[in-house]
Image 1 (cartoon, rainbow, N blue to C red):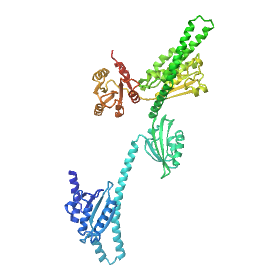
Image 2 (image 1 turned 30 degrees about the vertical axis):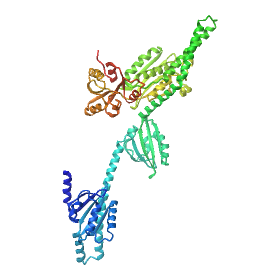
Image 3 (image 1 turned 45 degrees about the vertical axis):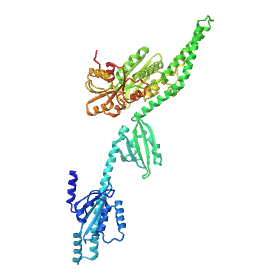
Length: 628
């Protein structure tokens, strides 16, 4: 209110009359000079006074001279005011004084009008006209016309300057918005040159420049990526919008792009985003659905087949105990072996079609690879040399059980490929902070052309009756569950199988950090708090998501959050992962792996199943547990 009073006092000091009406033609503000110039009553100078009432009052007072159709005159003035058009005019009042009227619309609606008494200026013009015999009538007329034009021009310039200021602010807001978007937004002309771009290309596609305005799209993206987007660019230039995805070979990122035609300039608007993680999750979900369908299709057949095998084994066992001629023994033995092999095959099929999920947890990759060496070495003959190496020093979120089974499977396959002697090399490497590659190479004969095409198909084998054809299929299935890939190829010295998995870095914390523990069971909260303090942590506690968020926002130095999935209230602990993007959130749960909430949590963060010991918790957090 004090500010309003100061503004009103300042307006009253202005020598010109001023009024501002809003978009509803109600008075927003006026100064004392307006009431004084037009002798207005108090009711017409108060905020909210109606414009139509003011016009009617002035007309009745004779401000506009004689009026034939009074109502039509008032209506016309009101309609002109609603149009909000900038204007400048000069007129003679009923009292004989001259005034100029300058009006300009406001960006928020309504308009401002300034009334200036120009009687003195007009008198000077008249005096100049009567006393200057040297100036012709034409020069005088043009001088007056020029003066009037200049006043109109000044009013127009003011309106244009205000419009320019508004446009500048809008452009700045638009630029800031595009820069804050986690996507590349750009425009190219008909020749493929960038006319606009935010500075996000290097974030979406690492290795590219950020300043690309003026560059051709092929120079900004590179030859390979340009070849992939060119057909879609041509479609958009021809007027057909296109949305597509492609893999950028330089960065191994999955990119989704939308090309929208710009029909006004025959160009294309471009929106591109990094959807690598989304693609990995989508691939994992698709593979899970395929496996569920396979389980439904095979469960009935497997059940009946198991019954038949049971009957066959029982009958053959009876035959083996009978006093039959000697030639029957080999036949009975072969039948029993075939039946048992059929039973083993059913077990492998069950392993593939059973409901399994990718359950990542913090894993020290270097120690894991050392364990692989320890587990695999005894299965290899002395004539086959095993080399296991990695340069990864940080922890990653991986499923150690499924990953270990897959690598051991690949190593045993490599052993069979090497024959009597050879070499097997196993390595783990990071790929552009996006993937982690586990590679198994051998010095065997390599994959045949047929194997390169069908090695990942279920039941395909090159080992004859000695192989089930499900080994590589199980590894491939695991890779897809994790949102990864499996590549097979030949090298100059043998075969190579690369298991490529999404790289999710697991946090590593000192034993002295502050922990936010979120657990709704008081007894369990006490137990876990004692574990954390024994590991050297300070602990603050919450029982619900709302309580945890309030603590996290009020305490900035929290090292990480350890939360149960099921908590007090309707919100789940998984919501803390997205609500606290700047904090590392670990989840615990006693829900079974088949529960959808468990699966959703595993896709968001590392999950530690209950019950767990202090040693389990220390390993999960990457600590050394010094407890006895």
